[in-house]
Amino acid sequence: MTSPETAFIAALRGIATTPAARALADDCAVLELGGEALVLTHDMMAEGIHWLPGQDPADVAWKLVASNLSDLAAKGAAPLGVLLGYSLGDGQDRFVAGLHAALNAFATPLLGGDTIATPGAQVHGLTALGRATHQPVPSRGGARDGDGVWITGHVGAAMLGFEALRDGGAQMQSSADVTDHFRRPVPRISDGIALAPFVTAMMDISDGLLLDASRMGLASGVTLAIESAAVPLAPGVAEHRRMNALAWGEDYELLFTLPADATPPVPATRVGTAQAKGPHPVLLDGTPPPGPLGYEHGGNGG
Amino acid sequence: MTSPETAFIAALRGIATTPAARALADDCAVLELGGEALVLTHDMMAEGIHWLPGQDPADVAWKLVASNLSDLAAKGAAPLGVLLGYSLGDGQDRFVAGLHAALNAFATPLLGGDTIATPGAQVHGLTALGRATHQPVPSRGGARDGDGVWITGHVGAAMLGFEALRDGGAQMQSSADVTDHFRRPVPRISDGIALAPFVTAMMDISDGLLLDASRMGLASGVTLAIESAAVPLAPGVAEHRRMNALAWGEDYELLFTLPADATPPVPATRVGTAQAKGPHPVLLDGTPPPGPLGYEHGGNGG
View 1: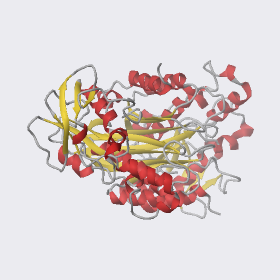
View 2: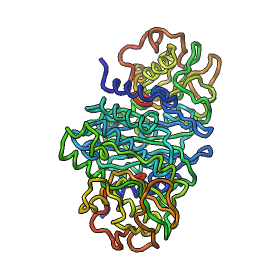
View 3: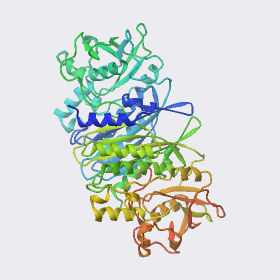
View 4: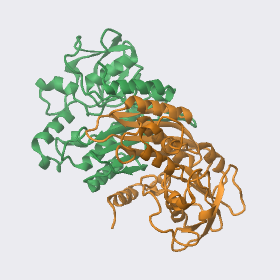
């Protein structure tokens, strides 16, 4: 069975034949212009799908910015600015406050956009563009047999934050606490820039480590063998929830590969090894991971 | 009374302080990069607001592309590509067909984007980027006292097309006819490029000649005095509907000003003169136009 979304993206792929589109299979488009490489991404979020009912619109705005800038980070791009598509609705003052806070935090200018009325749920979009700091711009497709597989930070923080927000209600929203990692994620912009000259492949972990690793494996034509015990869990994630944390998205860490003996220039943890392509794009402790790998969202186009 | 949209855009303006944003008062953002000037715009369209119930999704896709490329045309920019934000729903095959047709017609590549589910009405967004062919990039704000005011083409074609579609129903949609100008507008890309080195100000007519002229007058600090009889009406527009045609949007012609004695390098019609700033940004036959000037949509940010 092909889902409508899969069919739609496949049809778009038939149109997006320019090399800059990277076959809609990377985090961003990469367009050469005037000796520079421009890195471009666009993400949308819909009320009732991408944010919780009653969630602070300031947090929605923050995440919209952060998720797009995380895509730039995965390409080692320095942000140049964003364009906002906003559909009017309740909480617009809070939305502007969160937008302003995020753009200030990540030193990224607002360039323009559009504001519309919608008859139903609010739907917002954001386009982020950045300047590549290293060329060739890292892709998902460069991992080679024998490379080390690494991640920045840890996984599971967004999961804990989501659960605290869901269970604790509105009183959780105003203080700096465990919900921050879910409400106000921080893209790894400077890490991405530091890593770009050294990695063989790089992407951000937005849909879960296992699912995103499987995408990198497929794009690279290798199998990424992950050691579950090597993956750092966020503080507070119980050991019995390790598998949940490996499949939970929205941590916005970077997943990357390096030549076998290389070590990264920023704090990171080696979690596995790229192997010759086998029947599965990702293995966990030597076997195919059980159950769904993570959130089915996708990359540029998906 | 301040509308929520006006208040929102005012708040955004407080954030968008980078010169590239052009104070959210132009058709596009203009960003310098590597010796080039990058021209950027983002427009959204919502089901039930921006397209008729039952309208062919292929036409929706076409207009989404055309309206964004028209903003680039108004800055004399050559399109480099688009990013699509698509919310899933009925008619996705037709949408892809219309997208493909428009991108082919305007020689513009699809670079990437995002696809999401939405719980309510479909909302689509498109970001277009282009390369300025002339610097400084024309703005809305350069018209000077004494300049001639010009438009390409004629006005009222989209009005007739809309009315034919509304009154004629679905059988009107498949043949090349009067509805084409509404369903499948053609942005003036090559005209914009040819005009850019000569104009003192330029914008596209997306919300009606009078309203858009008032915006140019405000941005330029002049009064644009339009002679109604000089404005070319599209074939089929009855003389008694001249005022409707002057206030009807979606014709996607270019409105521009030239030094007093200059003539444009492309076919166009002089429709008035820029005067020293008076109490009204636009005059029609020497007096303030009666009634609403046109569609209140806006520019970059609006």
